[in-house]
Length: 40
Image (cartoon, rainbow, N blue to C red; front, side, top):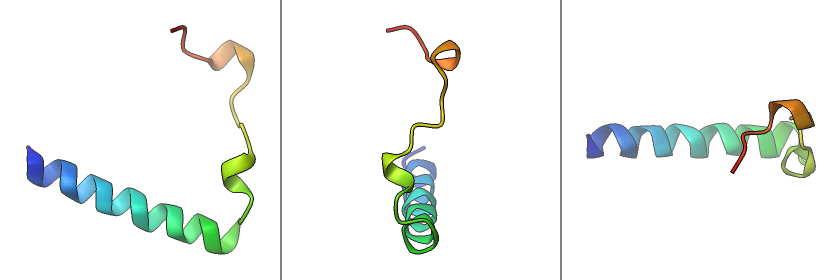
């Protein structure tokens, strides 16, 4: 289970790096509409 978590964490980091290079402002964008938000 921890191996899977480590692999997924690494993949997420890789994808974030790619997005940072290709779309530097992606972190500031909120792609969800109000109807898609999960209630807390």
